[in-house]
Amino acid sequence: MNSDKLAEKCASLAWNKKGREITILDVRKLTDMTDYFVVVSAESEPHAKAITDHLEDELEKEKVKSWHKEGYKNLNWVLLDYIDVVVHIFRDHSRQYYDLEKLWGDAKIVRLEEDAEDRLVFTSEN
Image 1 (cartoon, helix red, strand yellow):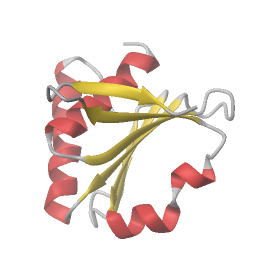
Image 2: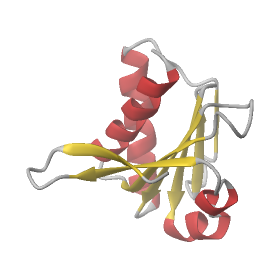
Image 3: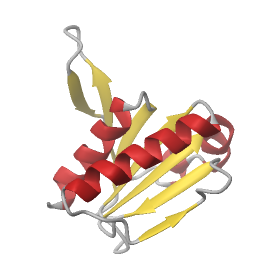
């Protein structure tokens, strides 16, 4: 699966578990370490755990396994590293504090939202 499709798949899977404020940051022109960040907000520790577990379980079914996982014990900021896509699942206070969208402000931003017919749509800001 290429990095574009993987980023969209990660965002959609987070949406399935009611992840909020889902954003894809295209950082290909800014760094060599990855192609995309997928940033997701979770309401609580159990919510962050549910999103994380769902992403890992569903992607493993497609033979996509994370290379590295951090933050799963405290669930304030969980990082799933799929090499070309890095997923950040934040509790609200941690997301505001680290503010990746501002830190990577030159990145192309794509948001996942629902349209009028409750379908998922990706909207680009840059």
